[in-house]
Structures are given as structure tokens and as C-alpha cells.
Image (cartoon, rainbow over all chains, first blue to last red; front, side):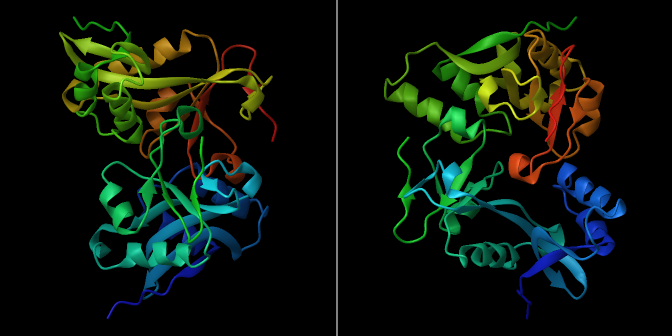
Length: 158
Length: 158
């Protein structure tokens, strides 16, 4: 039995240490570490990350960010939506439903979702019910946007 | 002797076929293919890509996009800048200066440059004279921005 409980991650030294195991570790994580060290944020502050634990080990994570509807260039009607990034399951835990559990959690907010599909990920996103959009260079700037439409929402006309 | 001549790439079936060899092939390339097939763009239209050939084979490429200064949130003074993405050298041609030749070409416009550093690329960007910026979640949305400042330009205060 796998435990698919998704938890909002708290920023503390343990979480930040676990983040180092993920491939997509970058300036965002380094910035959280600095903010914690310099007391700019409190220990156990809420992070924009959600994750799944196996025992006390973080094995899957994603970041979700709510974008204000006034910046929405993807959905019709224009509205607040979620930008999902850094979805990643540690190698030995893949193909067990952890990635899907995170995406289902993101969908449970019932807001449109936009992500930037990594190369080779299109079949995953399509299985999750996401669709690619009409590419707009000025908006998409080399990204591979995949979006999920809740009921009543469709692609914004460019 | 390696030929480091950088050329602006033209959109035609040969170029689009060569693009398939690059890992970062996605919606942008598929969209160019569709536009060509449906005669929305002419054969041999200019693309936003620049590349280096070895004989008649495309072995390195990048995309450059000029962002209007009114959207500049990275540089002080705010100004037009270049967004660089999909910088990639085919595996057997790496570590021969092709990547640097492309970046030097981008710098020759003497505009600030912003890129999203892939994981593991920070030492490359630092060698190229790029710097990481102060992470801003609302602006950077999980990216790893690396920027290059021409003389007289500095980081924009957030």
C-alpha cells in the first residue's frame, strides 16, 4: 500500500536538505535557505511546495503558485489560475502514482492549471487531462505550456 | 579548426528536421512546422533561432527574443533586453566552444540578456559572465534566471 497523502511543505532545514535530492534544485531553493538563515522568514513557514512522504522521507514534490486573473493570458474567461512547476518524483519511486496524486491535488482547487512541460513529458500531461496550447512566442518564450481546463473554461483567444 | 560562424536559421523543412535532434524540442518547433505546412509562413522565413553548422549539419542552436523595455523587470535602467533559451549543442560536439560562440553572438547585440539556467548549468553561465538574480517568486515562477549586464546596466531593485 502506498500512502498518497499530499502535504503542504514547511520551510525548515530538514525540508531544504531533502530538496537537494531533486534534480530541479535552483535559485528558488537557495533563496529559501538564505531567507531562513538570515531570519527573513521563520522556521516552519509555509512554502509554495507540496509533497508526499514515504516514512519521513520526501519522495515527490511540486510547487504551486496562484496567478492573479488580471495576468491571465491562457484561459477564457480570464481568471485566477495555478502555475505548477518542479513536479518531480525521486527515481526509485516513479510509476507508482505519486506524480498523479500531486496533479490530482492541484486539480482539487478547481482552478485552471498551467505548467511548462519538460521535454519527453507530453504523454504524461496528456494522461493527466492536460492539453497543449496554441504557441505564442511573445507569451510563451520557448516554454511548452500544457494547461488543464476545469468545467466551463476554455483556451483564451490570442 | 572549428568553424564558429553563427547564422540566423531559416524556417524550412530541412531546419525543422534537424531541430528534432535537439532535446529541447517542443511546442515551439511543432508550431513552426504547422505554420509552414499550412502556408501561414513562407518557406525560408527568418526564425528566432541562431545556429552553427558543421558542414551542412546543424550542431548547435539557441533562440533569442527581444523583450520590449516596458516589460523589463530585471535591469536598471529598464530597457529592451534579449531572452535567450534553448541553447543546446549536440552531445558529440560539446566542449569545443560552440556554446560560448552562441553566447558571444548574443552579447554582440550589446543588450542585457536573461536566460533560465537549466539544472547543472550554473558554472557554464558564470563562466560566460552571467550572474544569478535575487529570486522573486511572482516574477521568476520557479525559473533559475541568469542575466548578463552590458556596461552601465545593473540589477533592477525589486
